[in-house]
Image (cartoon, rainbow, N blue to C red):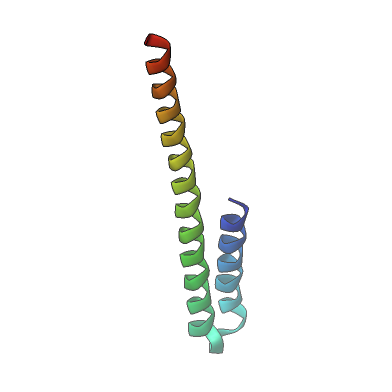
Length: 70
């Protein structure tokens, strides 16, 4: 999650710089879009990892309940 915060902070900085460097606005906005994309990828990876762990825990709990009941 730390990477998501960093990417979003960098995207914000790029957008803020547009006010001070209007001749490079398109380049800076492109960089901001790139950092937002990286943040989305990192966020998806984080939630995929959390969901995979939850599924593993559910499978282990079901296996334990089956072995206890038998």
